Length: 404
Image 1 (cartoon, rainbow, N blue to C red):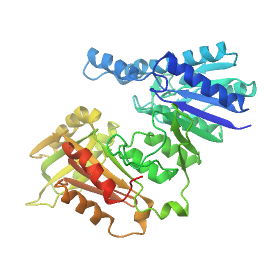
Image 2 (image 1 turned 60 degrees about the vertical axis):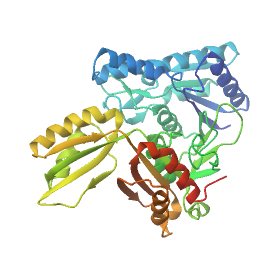
Image 3 (image 1 turned 45 degrees about the horizontal axis):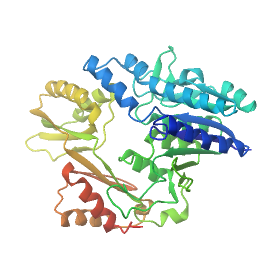
Image 4 (image 1 turned 120 degrees about the vertical axis):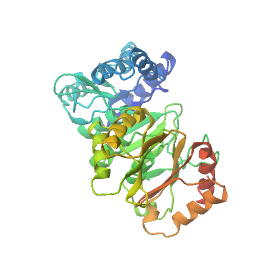
């Protein structure tokens, strides 16, 4: 008997018929003699609808009340699935995050899981019950409902798999695995049989929408095997696991893009110790993650400081940055939402030279200008004008021979 955690995304539970299809898959897994925990997202589009309602009420919704509102979507899907499984003759029980409970910190809209108290779930599993848990949510030490950020149901699933030492965590989505790039942009994209935690971590952080980044962090930390596969067929997907020697021989594994970032430039700021820290600390205090960071060469003691944030954080980030820039007597603060981040990822970069040259040459040949560059041991990212996103992805996919 294996303990299996299955997570189904919004598309997979988008209407009653699809929930019934999920129930059939869950039933097959249970009939095979497995213990089973199912984690569900809200119906496709439901969280966006709830967010829109919040934004209609006020420009910057209060975090606690925002979490209370947007966490309701998952309550619907877990109840519907449990109802249907019971009507099929199976023992099933639904849990909201606070009922498990999944304990988080108190950061509204972006809470982090601190621990999972698994006694109730283990008791249900021992009685042969299919446990159905609302993804994306938890509860803080003060009893407030919290949410884990968009895509947080992936994190809920992997965290439960880690806490209960599950044999595998299956992430069901509307694609049947992890591809070398977005198949909607590049028809030659190829599905990978396996990918390392580190590569998946980079791809997730760089815009690949298959897995949420924090779910991959959990998987790597607790060595959870994650199987990414489609809920629409029975095809084998992509296994996210520890790296092996075969993986290290691949120069570039994939090309990712992200249109959800915005660039902020603090112009004419004093080039002296502590300037960057003042800006970044203020953003960190507001729980706003900063991605790419560049400071140009100083001229006459002044420099331009550039960084990127998620577009959803741009309004608040600009308010904070303008305030700090005023204190630093910077000349001006500007922002640009019409950008895109393009990245290549691969373990082989650790031991091969010339990867950056190939990337930059391919973009140059397509007349795509690079605004900002960022690198790590296994990835290179650039910021470009967003109108060139699809072209850049196709050019780089071909340049590194990633076709199927």
